[in-house]
Length: 328
Image 1 (cartoon, rainbow, N blue to C red):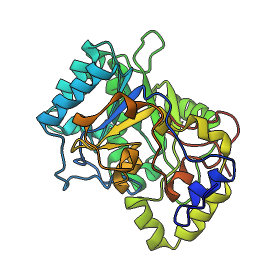
Image 2: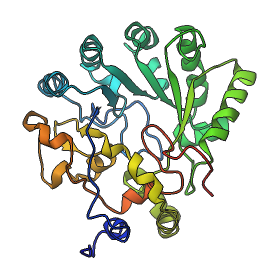
Image 3: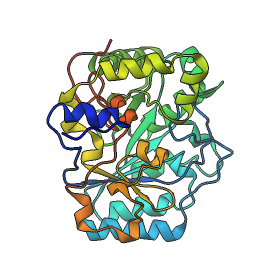
Image 4: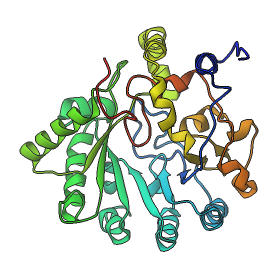
């Protein structure tokens, strides 16, 4: 196989006999609606926050809706920033549900306390949307340390609102799934065991329920990379990612079944590549130019950060790729 002097990940998979990483059929369209967010979390790979202004406009929203119609995606994965702060969020979600699609929103809980967002639990439930919400831990100290003072208390209140709207309950089909990111330069614990711990503690302490817990490995890009550099952990963390490379995670990588749309309509293989401005197919392409050929068999742009998705049990937007065992 050809050597890639500037791409250690390509060299690693070449040792396994792969000429590159290629997509399967893209069944999920992941749409990043912008970098505007009511929080500024330390681990955020989007570098989102209250002072960002990037937001998907109506023209691009219409192009997303057209693509959902034209290319028969099965799932719409709406993310941000806080996607609910985009003025066209409800339009997009409603249109997709009316097409019969499964719609997921990546939600940060505290956005419910932003003016105009108080009814989000009722809106989500009226459409049957899956809610994927970040909660660093079931205790205040760890959560506020990662996301800011007062976030934990608001998160519990917001989660209670979702429970009252039917989310996380045994007798509904309303899915509330939590996301766990480590607070430092280490990997998440085994997903199955941590899910059981979160379920037990949240129920016993606060009478709160959810369906599943997803563990995500922090990616060495953007705000988390800056923290690694400032804390002197960059070299050690990157070395650990590379040493923990697990080829069994390759088939389940999210980039193989997902196409990502940036807030400005540009196409990427995943949300991480979007933040690094690594375009899908190796060249800048916009949503209005999407073709059937782009959805299957395209070569995926990779980089050193891809070791983050292939370390240990693997990491994807749906949590650990390999569902047994843990990561040291």
